Image (cartoon, rainbow, N blue to C red; front, side, top):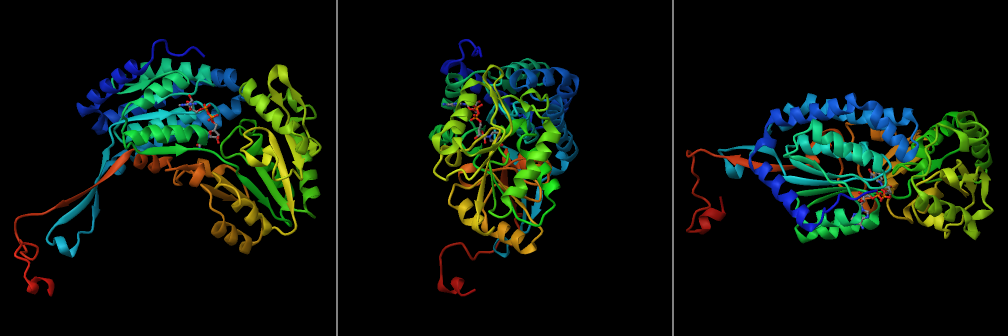
Length: 464
Ligand code: NAD
């Protein structure tokens, strides 16, 4: 995409300076400003629904249904929740004072951090750009948003619309790729929220460290699905399919990355999934309008490379069709993919779903724990014991039992990773908190001035 012409280090410094001055004027701190900006975002999303759907279609061939449900409605819900709850979120929270400060009162005051930078990714380019912005504004910050250059239509729509609906002295969009993001990262921000892969996450964190800037890193990883026997296979298959291919054709950070099931159950699961896949996407899924395409040729080549690796190529048991001219890959299931294959070593982030068969379902724990901590982990079972063991033994950003991906839509839950899948969390009130500093405030009067801590430090004072 066309980078913003001339957006270099000097322009980034000027922008940061301008927004810092705006923040220093205190305008963004007021309840009224925050609500007016949140209403602006809500109106933008409502007024331009059709254009947003078109942009997402142009960037990813994203089905309209997915654009409406997973991007537009999610942003609207976040705005509405923040508008409704903002007064209570902003209200200082009373804290219990300590005996050592008696008499006193104590409270926690949420204050904005200042000027924050949001760097977002291409796969849910509308949601992942605006959802953090909702939190940043609700918390009273000035914001610079850098959408992904890999979703150019959405990026340019955001640049066009935010300027019209929001206070441009405090909320700005910078379009661009690595050079522009690098120029932004040279500046001092009060928080950086980055969504994307862990390699760039490290670059962001290293840049932030130079200024001791805190980071919220929303990364990815290999999210496993453990499937026990004795379950409702049809329902389980549908829920796995919709979490994988029904989420941007597998290009979602919490999409199931691989399945682990037992050797004697694998063929039943595969049969059920094949049958449901056929009923969802038909016999020729490359033609289905209900599946996104792969975002660009680089990602298409990355995915076909995973599929064509010698260790893997004979393992396809369903799908595998591809169409380079349209950047489409059909939903593909593989069985017994070796652990040392590229497919099992890196996040797939596309429509390929390997199934690993183990002797006992409990063997799945060691297998998952031998890798880096996933962003999400899923389990299908009727066994309460297995559910308890899963929650206790598996470390992941979030978990769902007997479904996939739906935790994302629960605003009372924090959304974020752990270990290599990220740090920090947002959504709902957690978004407000992610962009606020909780200031500890103790207040005293002049009465009851205990002299214990005043010198001279006599022994008698220690024995009290
Ligand atoms: P991407 O290519 O859009 O990159 C993300 C952002 O990083 C972009 O704005 C891009 O301009 C910037 N960037 C890229 N290279 C850079 C560099 N060298 N220096 C500075 N900035 C740079 O997205 P991606 O990384 O392909 O996204 C996919 C990854 O993101 C997957 O790992 C996925 O799991 C993860 N993800 C996580 C979440 C989440 O909420 N946790 C959501 C979506 C995607």
